[in-house]
Amino acid sequence: MRPEPQRTCIGCRQVKPRSSLHRLAVIDGKLVADPARVTGRSAYLCRDPACWALAEKRRALDRALELHTSTQDWERLRQGILI
Image: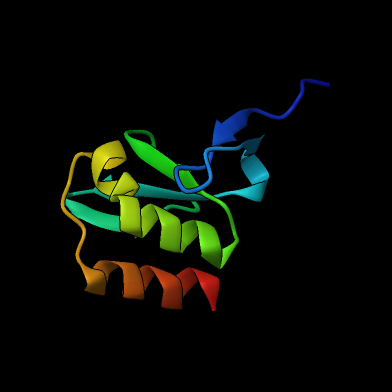
């Protein structure tokens, strides 16, 4: 049995198992939560709301995915994932 792949949270910068993180990706120019593991550029965030706040403050998602995220994007992601 192969070990689970490790990914780095863009909020806290800790390396964790992929299954313990949320994957976010850009599909057709839109930021989406990506449970289907579509190939392409993506970023990972912990399930901890503090990591999300830190990533938003540092604009880590913008750098990781090379796009501009708005406050509305973050709120939409929080409502769809964190709550």
